[in-house]
Image 1: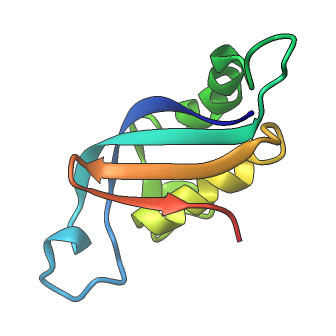
Image 2 (image 1 turned 45 degrees about the horizontal axis):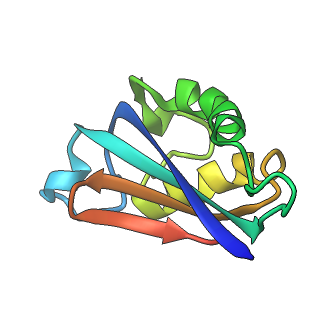
Length: 120
């Protein structure tokens, strides 16, 4: 049986998007309550009855959340232009080595705007 599990996380951060046109609201410094969904996929172990312990997903994501929470994202190496797309990829690159079942990273910066990233 194949399953997809999602564990959600939040963090608060400020950023600006320097590649947007002058005068665009996103080019100015602003903040978000970001929501990140980490999706893992694979075959359920028949003896255990589950794919991955949600605690393992949390343990893998927590160091990343700590790097991002209450920070100015533009100052973090690799996030000089922290669009949702770039942030989702940045998170993927750090999670994939420690979470082999990683299937997607979904970053939402508002309740109706976000990006789903599934690797390169």
